[in-house]
Image (cartoon, rainbow, N blue to C red; front, side, top):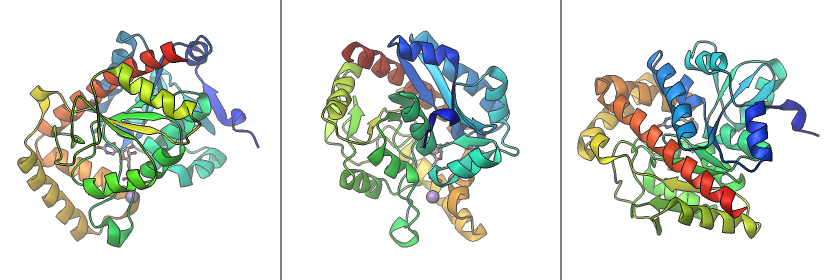
Length: 306
Ligand code: PSU
Ligand code: MN
């Protein structure tokens, strides 16, 4: 057994890690299945630039040619933006994609897996998966939550969309021992909206405070990751009730069409974008940039503790 032979770490990233410099992981499902083509191409390049501007090295992950890629070339990055023939890869799919050489975009789950193998501790995304509404009946619970329970990566997100059952998502994380930290907020943010109505137990005011908590967790030998909820900047935040209406409509449409399993999240994301005529997409971009900035600062603070 050895995962190293499957791992392909870009030289720039390997060097940064060897020198103890900050590296920030980024996922590719947000490109392939979370954002529309071709607008996602601009996002893919810009989010990496933002990490660099903060003084960290970006590491976007994907599965390409039988390898777990840590860091993509410009061409690979652009290839991941065109969802044709690119699968959405969760933990259960990894071995199949590696063994068959298929190209796969990594979700929060698989990005965490690959980052942990490479020794990267901080990861910026948009929103995580969670317990779906009526998840207590359908058992549709994102593998992202189990990964947070088991894999030592700190995930910076803008909370979870209210297309999920946010309350049950937090209950699940509590059961599995995942710290959820609010960055300058008392509530878990709801992606496009600054607050969800669900209180968090911990509010942190600085990236250093967050770094100290996760450092301590791992120093103790506790397994698993941590989740940071970073609210969308004021100027891009959308109205909760207005979004709720759109989301309810999108869910009803998914039910009617019988959309199931791993197709649900991408279906809802794309319907929400169309129904809000792109306003929600502009917010989506900004919250992801905002998370990349905070993740870079946390990664920087962590390098000073190690
Ligand atoms: N939520 C978003 N945008 C996304 C995703 C979730 O707002 O792009 C993606 C992430 O890659 C996440 C995945 O890990 O969807 C969760 O999918 P599922 O619900 O099938 O577990
Ligand atoms: Mn699911």
